[in-house]
Image (cartoon, rainbow, N blue to C red):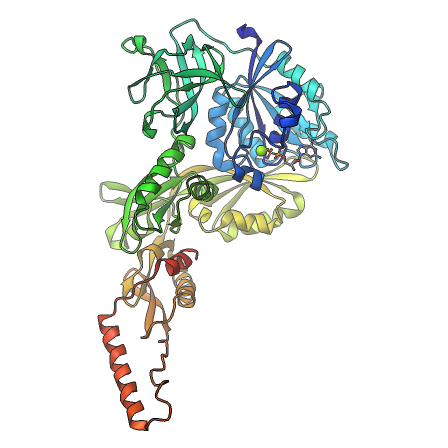
Length: 592
Ligand code: GDP
Ligand code: MG
């Protein structure tokens, strides 16, 4: 194989602009997949992706076209998964910048484009869905010219659905995207993804940067100093196809046989064992993804703790941005506190654990992190129940999100109103095309777990697209709201709120708890407390159990006696008064 004939590329697009469909056409035209085996969005291998129509995981695939090797790495479009995108891009020399002709450039197109530009990739601008009657090809061309300084003749118009323009696109990939630059030095490969298979162990997806990795080579994984054998090497077509070796410039896989999930890390450098004592440098790995949203998972069945641990460890192989550690709760037992890149990441992770690993668990109220200063000491708190009171701290800071919202002009007011309702600040507003605007804004990260994005979507009837990055820390006036039931604090219901909203928020939560809790044989007090002060209180009436029901007829005094007895019983209950909240009620409470 001649390295000059290799093209490594990726597709950058906003969600639903047609990446996976275009990938299908490329696979078909290059004969990588026989037509009769073709199903739609073939690279979206997870059921979950197919059902939701979104790409969560990239799946690399190798194609051949007129003597050229083309390695396509499909990338996810959602902002929570930009980490996946950046990893894919590091393995590529070029990217297709794909824009839906009926939608135009969207927020996530922008953020991924700028990321790729920083990495020095070569772009091919592509306009998709030109078969649709309401395609606005000329307008979108103008947007692309304005955004990336592309010349009109560079832009390729395609229909990923009917295949129009796909051959011109394949030619452009060969002509415009440069071959990989490789050196003849010692072998090095970058692990950009991995998955677990029970009989093969960990399979690492790699981009070979220098040299060659052969079947049965003794290899060395730098991050954990782990030695193993490359039991099998080859290409993804997209199914694994064995080869004798994979060489510099290529995208391929290595079967490591390693069974412990933590040992093979995404971003790690693979070298040959014989070189391990030389001073070969590790490849620039990836930026460690930093979780911004935290939530805990507790197994619902007894004894399922080990099963949940195993599932999380294996999922982490496939999703290196996931982090977790053990945690214990009075009510829910042993579980894990997990860190996520955003709320969608949390949602997808929970669903994948249930579907792919068949574990049952509950998820606690998500939280973000706060930076607390007390004297000289600075600490990070990412669980609301540990948020300190005023006298325990000097300063609280919280992170903000920097948002880019792309919206039709007509929806600008909706965007502004929503941002402001969530304590945000609207910044610069730029004109994007004829009918659309790009609005910059900043909103406290805390609002992500308070439903900000859902509110933005519904306020703009789904016409706005957005992307965000985590911005700076800012001082905030925040307090902890605790909820107690029958004088006992329910940890999982604690939350961090703005001091100004304390009373309103406390009343809202207490009222909701009252509506969800089942009645007991005695009266229950539900209270909201802020800084040692009760700011909201509700009473849930006792359940009336008619103990006299079976005494029909009977004389009055017997009835009275029984009632009295019952009253005493209730009193005793109340004094001993532990209220055990059943896990299923808990789950309802957590959903508030
Ligand atoms: P992705 O989220 O970028 O991977 O987008 P998909 O490939 O899943 O496509 C999103 C939707 O657009 C699907 O319903 C596709 O069938 C549809 N679609 C993709 N490309 C075209 C096209 O060229 N023309 C038309 N009419 N529909 C398309
Ligand atoms: Mg897709």
